[in-house]
Length: 61
Image (cartoon, rainbow, N blue to C red; front, side, top):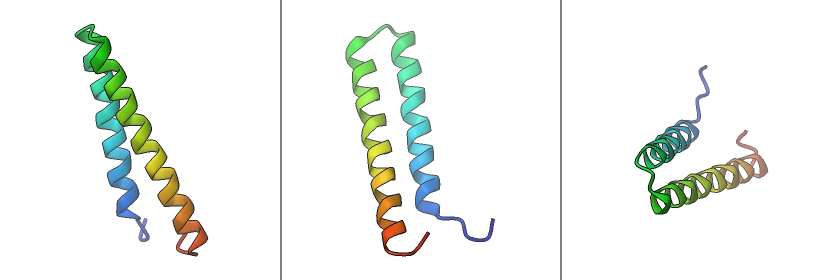
């Protein structure tokens, strides 16, 4: 637990908030908000995986 990569903690919290957004959008039965929250979730996940790949290639992970 000494070598925490805080950027990944932030990515995971952002993804969690996007998932909460999906849940709220479903509760409000708003299709545009559902798609928006899913798009945001997808962008967060893609950027997190790209960052991880870049850190692996740089030898930081």
